[in-house]
Image (cartoon, rainbow, N blue to C red; front, side, top):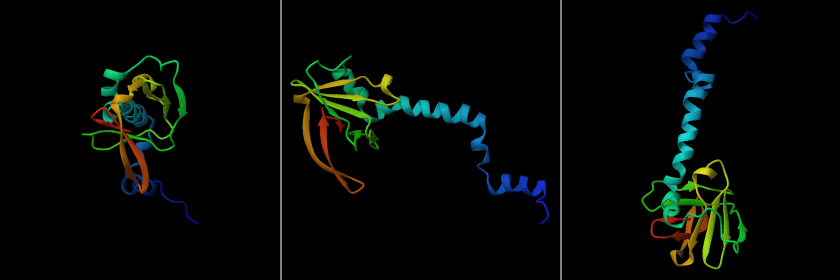
Length: 146
């Protein structure tokens, strides 16, 4: 077999595979990493977490809170949000006599304060179907759904 000419290989990567630049280190450092950081910082705003933290944010859960674990499927969204934010196995839930306690356990932990939402602000919002999976939904306040 004859070797493939270098010019043909170069043309292949420039014309046929125009995405080759996406794997360059500079692209990762200057585009991908800042984009991931920006998305991580916006997650609290997009989900409605920051609004809840203004009125229900705490430094630590109440001492009498019983840990209920992290749900396998969890979506949090604002009423006016375009898409729910996925918190599968990342949202730790606990119940205290006075509040429903929520804490995010992932890369955005420092940007999303733990919450202690009083039971009077929590209501059952029925079942919602996500990808064919019926999930129970809670309304926290007027504008955030878990």
